[in-house]
Length: 310
Ligand code: RIB
Ligand code: CA
Image (cartoon, rainbow, N blue to C red; front, side):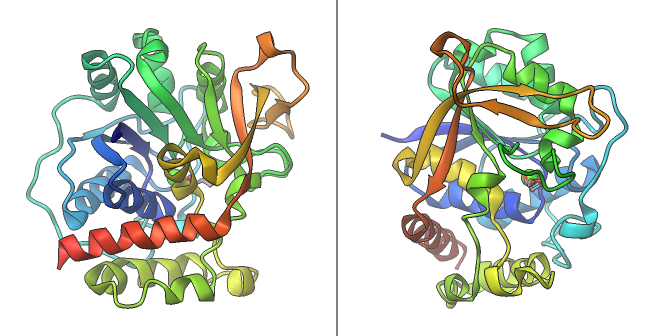
């Protein structure tokens, strides 16, 4: 059964690989892409979303969303993803237009048109999702599944307490986790198991333009940090897409997740209680990844995309 999905993202190198996975795996049909400011400013995440859609040969509408967090000043991860978001890669320009709607309206109208049938994945700060929940609270019932890449139940990556996506807009994350749906929280504890190491990258050889124009230059850039040399960079966002494709790739534990918004040192922390009573649980938290099957899935999907681009 093919799952329809709308992806809210901030491409971003791992967002780019997540979009390729979503497009290449036949079990998903991407019906919408919405951009949010995050890794890099909104103008770049929006342009990257448009260019990636056309580079991969996707057809989903792309809409521009929020450029800054609900309350705080924005932060970015240009030091990780490069100033324009895809390392030193500049994808071909595209003539196609953005969807005229704001991302929040594309999210609401897409879910409203098929209640219970379309899933939502967020791989960037949760500003668009929080605004959509506030504008139309019924989206929490209309979304078939809701999966985020964000948070951590041990250690953050932006601060010791907070992961980047949640740290970028803790108030939005708090709104999202309290909205009444079950959030599948694919956090750093899971995504740090998804490493594009040297062995994995040998599997991308021969994938034509996808490999030469995107995968290799982006992964070289993303993995340039010394401590990634051995392990390889973590492909965080693709894990959220992989979960929707095949949840058996991961062991997941129900939990209560609350987002800290007040702490001087702990703002953006996803306080995760695996011992919460059933009635208090608002999240499902994957903890272990079947790495072999994950990379099989990724390689298969990239092959499909590469063939369609040839
Ligand atoms: O912390 C990892 C997350 O922050 C990923 O979504 C990455 O793209 C960045 O947005
Ligand atoms: Ca991201």
